[in-house]
Each structure stands twice: as structure tokens, then as C-alpha cells.
Image (cartoon, rainbow, N blue to C red; front, side, top):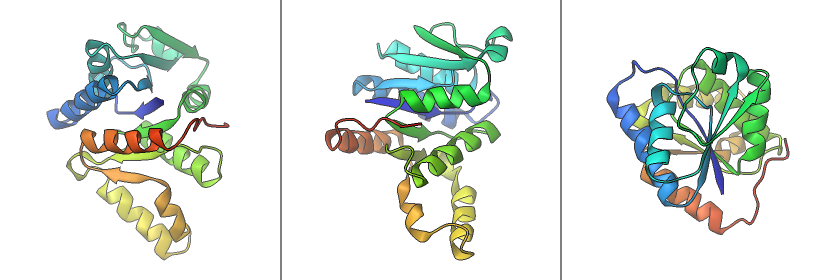
Length: 189
């Protein structure tokens, strides 16, 4: 199974976020999952990639050419796919992935997560979507989704198309359960 991880590129966040990103990277590699991520060499993306690499896991970075040219890429990743822009980057990441995990992040991470949810809602992505809610980071977002449901902008049954967890270990539990129950959950995007 290949797991796409969306994560922050900010290096100014609390260390607990970086520890969870690193722990997730180690656990993913240890469980034999391949990882796809945004290709960045800073912030939570860097913590995740370093941990996967040091645990002898397979990780693929997908990065737009302008970010690569700015030197924002992770140099230690064995495979880097360079795209022409942000939209192509997301498309490529989705197409390579069987599951999505969202770590805390900024607008880019939020945009990637909401696109994944939308694709699953439209039956264009079939894999699990897992939100790692370190330190309750996504609580306000989840409250906003409840508001969407209460005001009939989102169907109540669509709230069940993702799972929210508090630890990297819970992410692995879900992925293991889903991996055993599915032969191929590739995106059709």
C-alpha cells in the first residue's frame, strides 16, 4: 500500500508536531508502507521524510518545479517527481496513493485534505482518509464541518468518509485494517 502524507512545510511549529511526523514516518516504513509526500525538505515534511529514510522505507517526493528551483526539496529522497505546478502535483500524489493521511499544516495542507475529501465524496478516490489530530489541531476544522452538516451544506453520511485519530500508532492501525481488507484501493483521478 502506498500512503500519501500531507504535512506542513513550516519549521516554526511546536516540536510535538515534528515528533508525530517523525514517529509516523518510522511507523509507516516499519509497517512496509510506501510513502508519497510533497517533496519538501523543511518542516513536518522534512521530519516525515527523514524518519522514513532512516527506517529504510521507500518515500517518493512530488514537488513543483518552482519549489525545486528554490531549493525547497528534500535531497535525501530516493525518488523525486517534478511537476509543472501545484495542481499537477496533487493529481500525481493522488494517482500514486492508496490512502491519505493529513498531518497538521497550513493552507496548502488544508486544501489538499479538502480535495481528498471531495474526491472521496464524489467516488473518485476510494482509499482511507485519516486526519492526525495532534494536540487537537483540527478541532476547529471538525467543528466547521459539523456546522456544514447542521446547515445542510454537507450530508451527515459524508462525515464518515474520513477518520480522525490522535496518535501515529492509530494511523497505522487503520491502515493495517484497510490494507488487509482491500486488494487495490487506487485512485481513479
